[in-house]
Image (cartoon, rainbow, N blue to C red; front, side):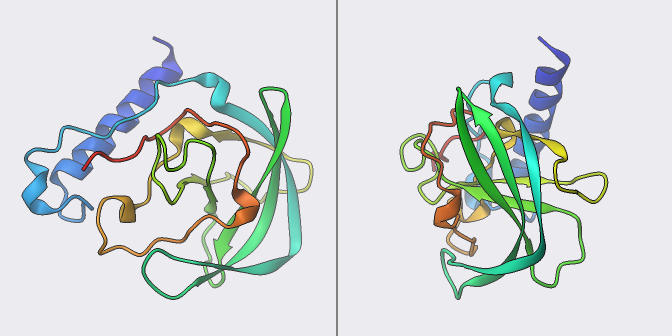
Length: 180
């Protein structure tokens, strides 16, 4: 097993423990005793892609529909361009309008959505170590794609991936649909 796979498996075990035991787990308390862990695709380093960054100096606001409430306003701060299986794709990265953090939110859908993965889409979060600039390269690791908390409980309201982040390919990496 590679170092990468070991780190990924450790990350997944930590998340399973959080879901099984933490008071803020999205799993209802009455179901935590029977929770046996999340279901994942096998780790696949082919789904760790190098993406070229295009920074939006004057980020456009984007209204994202949510699963349970009013739309949420994000800013499209970057576009990631990458290749997967010989095809070119783009994904937009967002930040909440008044968020001072560095985390870039990348919600997406692909051809597994509603089949093998949560029917509303999945998320990836990137935390660049420094400010991104045009032409920078970052790794997007689809093995880290996860289902939002609303996949486990209707008490959560989650942003839905906008159409610009619907990928016309199959991403068999990351979390599968919850089996609740």
